[in-house]
Image (cartoon, rainbow, N blue to C red; front, side, top):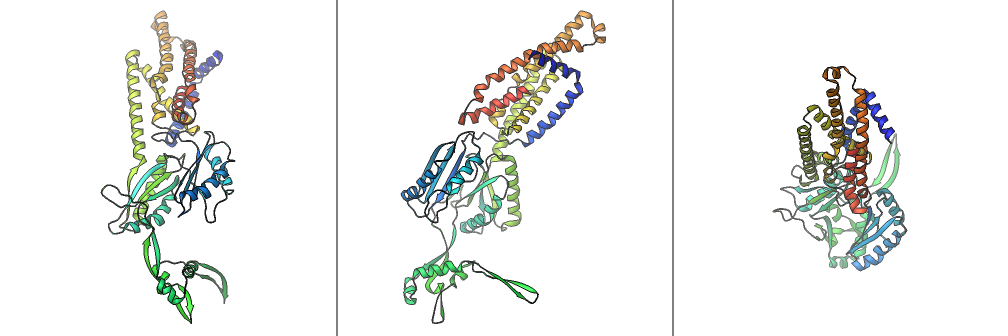
Length: 485
């Protein structure tokens, strides 16, 4: 090890321009890594999990648990490296969370669940869905729809059919969750007396409406030199089309839906209502980010899409207004960390200048700090880790510059001692490279082992598992990378 350190020192002193070139490359790589490293306010400490959501409208919690939750849990038993299966059953809803070990990646976990989900014996018409890939810290943006002219029913329709579909197309967005408003429906209120008069049952009326609300594909008819595509268009677009559906033909007279029922616009039964500030009833949306994405990039793309929606796609009286933006929290965290880093650098530089009383020594020592930080960002980027308030707050500038202070001060002391021995005239003309090399070799050994001891002290933090590991291991990694840099 001693010989290895001596060779590094000798090579560095002999190939100064190569070392400067490598340092410049490292600086460029560090800046690029800094710009592309995901920066968040706090780390994601959750375990790998896959959530299965199944809806069975109108069924009690007991039925949902018996016919959906339990069969799905049984189907998930063969999943490898799972730690737990947790379920919640509500009226018409089953939510099952399959928890995995820390080292299992999300895509492997989801693939296992997808493969086994088909084995679950579920009632006809019930289709379980796997929740998009996001964690509890994935909520990055909240907004409401504002309009002075439209009802919450109209706003909800715009949210479901226009806004949600456009925002889902943004890279990095996992899901859009909507709250509030009324879900628009076409309601057919049957008149029993009219059914009796015409001799039509409710089932016949239902079947007639269902069969009329479809498009039918045909074939191609060739006439002269042209081919015409034949198809039947039957999807219902408005109330008038629904009213004019033929239910039955009696003696050549068509019986329409409007002859049997009152057809009008309505909404699904409301199970809740969203209010904000002084507004009692609003339509709200939550944008959820896919796990592992860069919040800054996703929010920037999301804002561009929202601006495009407000300017070019939505009606002029409808606007998307944000009231929660994760970027504000991220910027505050970055501002706090940046402020502390700048203060730390200036304070350490000032202390070094006072005690070493030499501006050249101070500059050399101060340069080590940004180089160490850039090297840490290179390593974080290479490992796919994000920077956050905890990891960046772990950097101790005093520990980082200890080695540089010892090395530079040792070399300057040796040069000063030699100058006193031979006198300044002789010292100015003599070669100092040998003295610098020997002094640097002696100091490098002490610096190397001191850094090694500090990094070794971080090993217990590296060994943390689960929540504590995800919370504190980035702290140890960042400090270790900075020390290596």
